[in-house]
Image 1 (cartoon, helix red, strand yellow):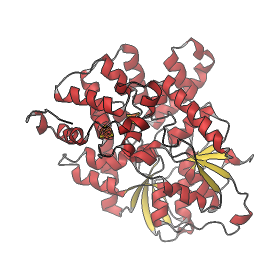
Image 2 (image 1 turned 30 degrees about the horizontal axis):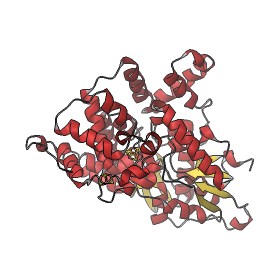
Image 3 (image 1 turned 90 degrees about the horizontal axis):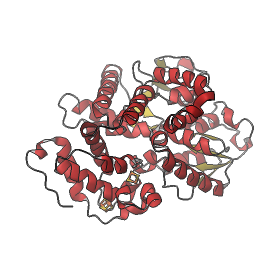
Image 4 (image 1 turned 90 degrees about the vertical axis):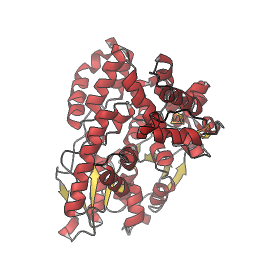
Amino acid sequence: METHFSKNQLKDEQNKSSEKNFRKCVHCGFCNSTCPTYNLLGNELDGPRGRIYLIKDMLENNKPANEKIVKHIDRCLSCYGCMTTCPSGVNYMHLIDHGRSHIEKTFKRNFKDRLIRNFLSLTLSKAINFKIVLILTRLIRPFHFILPKKIRNIINLMPSKIPKKTLSKMTIYPPYKRKKPVARVALLTGCVQKVISPQINEATIRLLNRHGIEVIVSKGIDCCGSLNYHLGKSDLAKKNFKKNISTWYEEYLKNGLDAVISNTSGCGTTLKDYGFIFKSDKDFKKKAKKISELTKDISEYLDENVKLNFLKDMKNIKGYKIAYHSACSMQHAQKVHSIPINLIKKTGNEVFDIPDGHLCCGSAGTYNLLQNDIAKKLLEDKISNIEKVKPQFITTGNIGCITQIAQGTKIPILHTVEIIDWYTGGPKPDILKKL
Ligand code: SF4
Ligand code: SF4
């Protein structure tokens, strides 16, 4: 794609990097074929190629965003299905992040939109704020029908109960039997996940501790920052990124860290991108690169570093038919697909890919809250494809997908780490107790 950025514009590092990406694009349109929003809406501007043109036009011509551009960019799921298909290696993720940040700086959304987006930014990125909102939602749920549609959608997606934690809050979880640790890792426990599904972090910690690994849960680390980043609030997100990078880097220097573990693939994708985001920041460049290098999805870490001690009497445990939902952030952004499947297969269960598994379930961070109609259609398609496999339960590695898919089916769904924990000596997940 031809570009016409001025020399002055290219002094800006983000423009420089986006320009490289625009130049890689040969406008072949292959990406459109795997884009969920293009497939649903059939409009060129609702596909990656069209969006790339919109972003290029804004950045190159120093144009503020307008209603039309915002509509089509907002409809992008950031699922990155287009990146898997692109033969030219265009990093669409960096382009859409740049586009969103430009929109936030140059376009004033209407009052209602600003209110909802600021509300999401404030509540979802802080576990304590989210917990308070969950309690309040329980009080207003009976009257939710009088509220505007978007607020109703948000309330409908909120869980009605806050599950109890079974592991006490600590900053260091030593290996079982107080053995000398074979490795030391930091765990990102997340913001929303630790409130609505504490069992995922608990299974991760138990599993790692049982295999001799010390787990650090650093104080003050809540959100990975991706929520604000994808809302276009890049300044706010960067404050969050810097806090995380500084905390983990200090831990790495002082006591040593073998990895930073993410068990939410949406967050892991952002952690792995810290190095790129700060590549021109002289104070954070080195630290951010190190944190990105240390970041592993839990499935990758287990596969590369841990000899899992599966239960000896595993053959006596009932075999299940499991559908594996490959989260977009896992398969398209991190390119991790077969690792979790192979790990689950080691438990002796049957694992099935879901037809059209490359397509998003509609969760996509705050997407199901902000673009409910498209998200709902994608969910219906996903559920219908899952049902074709006739699984006894579903598994995935991302809390957003777990919450979204659970809205559309009664088939139980759980995080992959819960299965591995169970088959290596942990408790059977509650959700499967009736199976
Ligand atoms: S597939 Fe890649 S090169 Fe082709 S139009 Fe899409 S982004 Fe551009
Ligand atoms: S990220 Fe997903 S929704 Fe957005 S353009 Fe790419 S394929 Fe389409």
